[in-house]
Image (cartoon, rainbow, N blue to C red; front, side, top):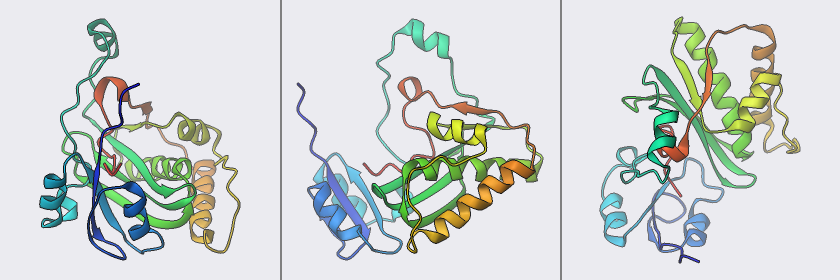
Length: 213
């Protein structure tokens, strides 16, 4: 069994800022902190350098991806369509603070971002991100496709229902209000946007990835 690689965590905004050498220490700084900003790095030096910079300059950035698939498999999958947008979600804990966003696939320019929401899950975030993306593309009259790396969220969108088992509470009411709006939008609107599964094993992390863990 291969040894898990050590990571270092930069916290730009949290109860305490700085570089932390464990996920548990990082999590303690961002838990229940509104608008927390953090990301993992492979070395202490990289994390320390990032701390002196701007969070937005590092979000979603990672080392060059090298696929482990065979040449034949990669050829069969092909390359991603750059005439598209990508969506993704991130959550700290399960449930925990959740946010989602959408970016231009080619330029990685952020098109929208929502959150953080209290007591959310990754699947809910992925679902909301897709619906947000669909509404955006419809409003713009765009023919671009939409990529997501969540098959679960794709199935929920297809069924026009967020099939989460998460219970509604006072803390996550704003989140579920958004879920209700998303479900209503799906049931009252039509769209021609094609929702496609992002091939992570072939292409690496989806461009909308928050790049934190």
